[in-house]
Length: 358
Image (cartoon, rainbow, N blue to C red; front, top):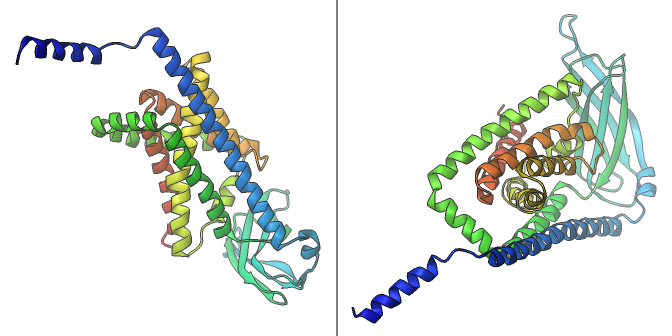
């Protein structure tokens, strides 16, 4: 090695250690804001486009849904027969009824919702039933046993038809997969940097994910206590919708796993943490960013249904995700991991109930 080689090595080392100047930092932040804006727009546009596509497909198959629904005949009015246990409060009820598809259309799925009420007009729960492929001219004979806590004196009946849960799973899965791929393309260097840091301190980050999962669990427990304080016992419409997607079909469950446990955590964490958190924080502070992004996260889960009191658990969950993101030094893979564990836990619980294991 000669003197010139030594000089060259020193120059290279010096160049690598040059700190980012204020102007470099300024342009980097501008670039990140632009990328975050692109990802936010992709999220909004993809949600709108796939919802519009689902609506168009549905309208094409069923051009006049109100008229079609009028041709559903209630052959036998639903009845609720309560089983009593030695004079104590009722513990189960048999719900039965017969419906006729008197329209010219075949229904991929025919559904019935029955909400039971006691003598004080308190809801005893909404019970949902469905039949796949109710063809034109066919009957649906409903007879199901349900567990209840209380004595029903009346019910409210709702029924209709749709394209089936697997259709909506595929539509939503396509949306989040495409959004995830576009996110990766737009902000590849940031994801690459986060993943490198995640791998270099793999054990530490896995520990953060596990601890984060338990923190989310505690946050949800606290939220449930608040709901009980306000005498809210109903399940959120968002949760009921998710429950309705589960069926004893391996293909459907595999697609649902990809939707709920893999791609939804990726998309939601990128939007609500990487984009919204990092939009709010520079303009305020970390605490406001945690609260703001968490509140928006929670409200977005109930906005379509309007049951805003049910946003409390989702807001608490969003607050905890924001805190974990902050504590993990904004490594997006940590919160994606926590979100995955939370959704996976719920997924497994529903599968076990579906197959009557628990």
